[in-house]
Length: 314
Image (tube, rainbow, N blue to C red; front, side, top):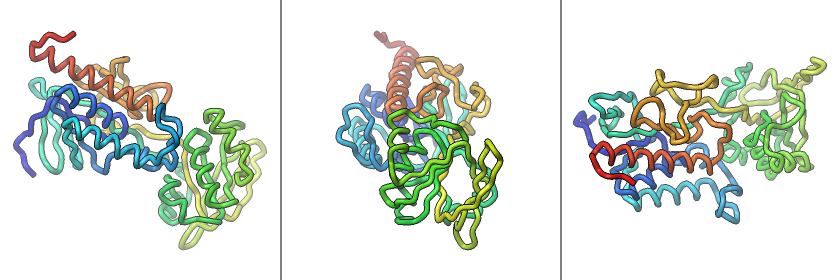
């Protein structure tokens, strides 16, 4: 690994919509920008089969195509994008020091756009059958279960969207939700409720996933009367929320659910440090709000950099 620090003005960690939008806006403003992610750009978006609710993008497009366009747009404005694992983030003498497995980088400003990871149910069989019928990505693994018995767990936008997609692959989708009604947006929930290929089990939880070499059944509990039933299953897709990825900066201020607290300018309590996208504390998490977060963070970073350099900023 090269230990000599490579200098930038603005470093973004995380290359989902928030990071890519920030890289685009910052580099277009002639701010030397580095975007780092341990995997390919896109975050959760690359798993979306049909992106239909991003303003101005119509008809629907594949999530992968949307992200590829964002990536190329950022590169065209001069952003540097690398794939690397970040091991630590420090601040010294007014500079953020980002250490990765491929090199050490420094910048006056830093954006955390690290997103969130799928929350687990924590039930017997979930870990054992991961990759053998248990999945957290319908577009990735759904095609393996055409015409099979598929269960989806959750009640938010993601669970309803993924159940709708999976219902294009089989006539046997069962959506299990622990509450009496969905948390999803009405239009999204209505598509599930009107789909003849989706059976909804409200007030229910998955207690156990069973199988041998692969998933063969699920144990369902009704939370109102405590009745239990075991149903045949070939796959279980789990969408029960996300956990913010804040492990790089464990001392930063977070809310009760662990999301990073910022003001409306994406600024944290640390000067020059910003947070954007799904890792940030906010009431609504969508691609469009992540892009907005990233653009605002980049604008504030530019202002911070130019004021620090003594340049007049209006």
